[in-house]
Length: 202
Image 1: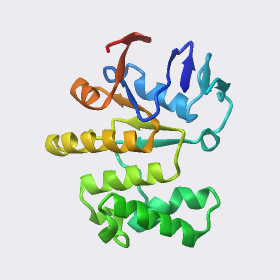
Image 2: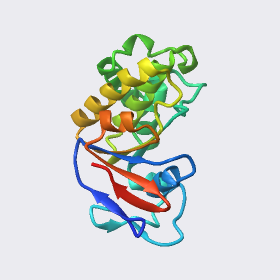
Image 3: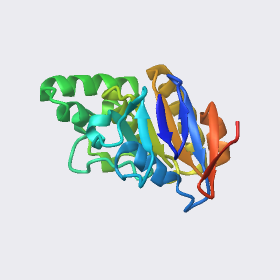
């Protein structure tokens, strides 16, 4: 369960996505960064499963983040991009690469394992980013406008695929978006952030 206090909303749903909507500049990305530990709140708490993690650095929180620009490493192969988080956690390079290959196979990307990420299409890059996020089995997945750089047809395809893969992985996810259609396609619950106040939508 992720809870942002005084901020303040919590949810508890393995395999479920919760959406946070709001206009540009409303603070939704800032709220996501506070949850991730990339920014500090001036007051309030961030809790997970009832434990205050407000002072924890991002790497200790066990969350995975995805951004609209994919944030892949251009100098690494597709396989090594996916293996990166496991290696950072201390897994041996050979074992991490084996797990990365298995994950890429599940995503239909095994044929691209040795390719550089910049040679892939936008949709393929976003799938690589999701594979990299899921392989570490994070406690929660934080998504910041993950499809906004893609065309409309690909956005629709990927949001359906992401919803299914997040559910299959059994983790909770927080989706930040300005697009209510996207939120309805992916999220079980949604809130709108307006004037610093969270308002339930469904």
